[in-house]
Image (cartoon, rainbow, N blue to C red):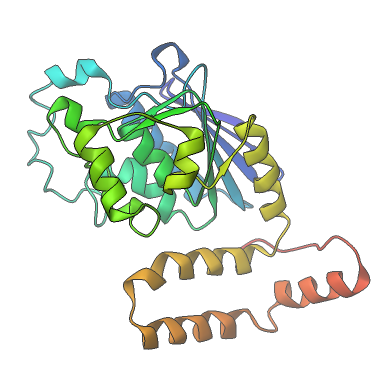
Length: 267
């Protein structure tokens, strides 16, 4: 099953895994207004997609995403509705939500990064739970080059992954770094010569696990950095209590004991 959004993003769904393809390869998947809207529409589509257990995010053609389309710099009317401070999508404005929505999706998201991944593209990839980069991919926190700062949720999404002084240096200088270096710096989880194949393999592995347990684990991972010690311990206990003796938890045990593939029920 495949669906296209505004000729910018294509979503293909098969065997519980959705592949979200930034599909503007002739422009290195640069972010224009239509791409922003298409990514948000794709995210909303996924949120309501029955049977979804994992998402792979990748780019068509020679790049994951080259960042903001340079033609957008000439737009002076784009924030006439009140400016960047207006929260249009929960706690985020629209550009922030384009990256943050992958963090907020209830299922794991894996980004496969190849070619160029600059600026807003890096922030979108950073919204994923896991990032697999080609060793020769080119990445950069690019915004200062254009007299701007990262403002698509990057500072939130990099927190806990990228060391503070490293992020400062890369932001201030906007120097490029490779996919291999990205893994060492915390921007990538793994390096692979075929990041999309590795991401799809991992997504299907995750899709074979209890969807209730995986969703609960992502929820805990998202919430616990913002909680105190006692709150983290309580959050663990409450999540575990909800899973124990549930149908999928029982099926996981039975399948393991019987050495067979489990038959899980989706939320």
